[in-house]
Length: 126
Image 1: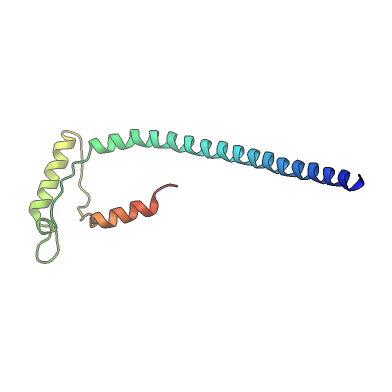
Image 2: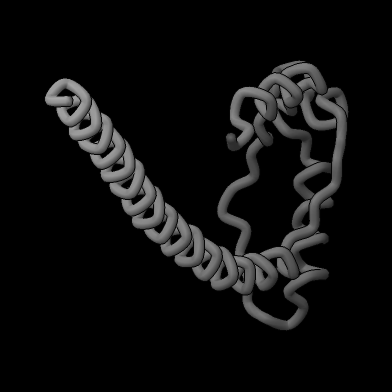
């Protein structure tokens, strides 16, 4: 009878420890999820504010896709015709407002479809 009582006490102690750890894990996961939600909500608020600013900036931009041969001369410089077109586009956007073109430079090379797919695959959220 004594062995049976010790076995019952050991069984109850085991159940108590297991359920205490499970409750502790539930509390930890709940706190972690609240922290993550708060961080995501603050990020969305920043994105909303930035989106308002980006819309204003996008109104002031005119983007045209051209090939490298159209932009570069033999010596690698941007030809005067391209700069004139850029200046005309800026003038069309700003109109009567005072504006000044400080510099014109080539954009970075565009990634290939395979490079974009690899980048998206490796940076996808969990």
